[in-house]
Length: 185
Ligand code: AMP
Image (cartoon, rainbow, N blue to C red; front, side, top):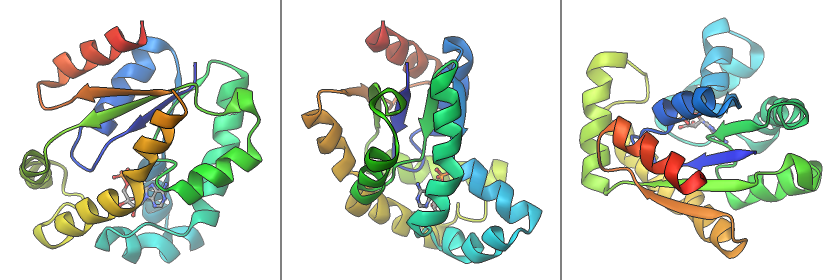
């Protein structure tokens, strides 16, 4: 199985991604984590994207495609993948569609649905614990807007493709994990 997890910032995508990858024996590929790794290591790519990430903007397509697709290809050839944070726009989904074979593309898509006011609250609470540079009052609104404008259209795209499951993610992490496992079984 190649599982794609789509969710707005604060939907629990990272937490669920880690748990589900472990439970299902899939390779976890998290686009945001890969980028944060580049920033922390001070690579040329990290330097190029740090400011965009801090403002909650999407980084350019080409480097994120180069980071993610080889990993997705390798994972699809072995255990399958759990991909979170990519694609984040219809353009990225099209690029993946051109570069990957059918067997390397997502076979199931889960959308984590959470009301906007809950997302805002969760992100600001997480800011205190994790100290992420993009979890702050100024950036939160922009990240939610970027999601609504650029990433949300993917939900309809995958619904039309018959791959989509919508899961109510406005509940405890354990309940969300169990709900996702139920729709997958
Ligand atoms: P995340 O950890 O998934 O919330 O991602 C954190 C940040 O990394 C995003 O706000 C973007 O700046 C950047 N990012 C992650 N994935 C992508 C992607 N597929 N395309 C462009 N930018 C991305």
